[in-house]
Amino acid sequence: MLDAVDRTLIHALELDGRAPFSRIAEVLGTSESTVARRYRRLRLKGQCRIVGVPDVRRTGQPTWLIRVRCSPGAADRIGRALADAPGAAWVQAVSATTEVWCSIRSSPGDRHNLALMRRLGHAPGVAAVDAAQILRVVVGGPTSFSIASLPSGAAPLTAAQQDRLVDRTYGPPWTSPPPPAAIDEPLLAALAIDGRTSYADLARTCSVSETAVRRRLEALRRAGVVFFEQETDFTALGLETTAMLWITARPSRVRAIADALAAHPAVGFAAVTTGRTNLAAHVLCSDVDALHTFVVDDLGQLDGVERVDAVPVAATFKREGTVARGHRGA
Image (cartoon, rainbow, N blue to C red; front, side, top):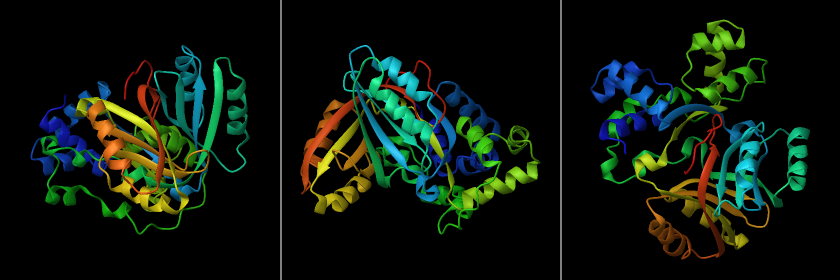
């Protein structure tokens, strides 16, 4: 479990993943070396990591949620293969490892991902593949799960401390997205591995000057095209049970149910989708009993909810960033 200092540091990085350690230290009332040491330790343990992520709501990239039903024993192989696919994120085995789900970002007319979906249907061990396009994200991206929503023991920052850390240069109202540039692909690829990569290292990776890479990243952030997400080990926060929920709702109530999901602190991701169901959500709970309470008492009582397919997460192969080799659990 994380101690109070770790949790407060995580909250600070949640507010600005690229905030200088010196500024975080000043706000937390500790030394820069302590903040740097704590972050390095958390990152090495896989408990906290900052990654740069394109916001599909600003880029317009079509995003798909893929459910792959497979035979027992095939989930590990399929999950690892999907984790290596371009544009894939949040690759997880669920439902006692007889199903793998993931999200895939693509570009209009992206033949590679279309071919991937076709190949999946014929892969050994695959029983069925369902694909649903995200129509609207209601929780996720810059508005995903916050450590501040945990019980008071999480020791989040005070409102005054949060205000000192939030860089409003990169918040709404957004500027217009800049035209695509050659630097974008290597820049975003580097930030997906480590969102705190220095400008000097980014410049070397992109073969441009440090000034050029700084200006480009600042332009992308001001336009809301890229944001910095904190990948946290939920179990270290006491959240032992995570699950994907596939929700069938009466069409006239989809908006109201989506709003209810957006307001619930246990929901880390939620979206309106096409497909057999019309809402999907990723929830974070302390235990199985808390998941039961969420599904039956919180979600089940909402007018218009017709069916909920809740599948607990058994293994995670990839989150937003790089592949989590050998990582199990939430």
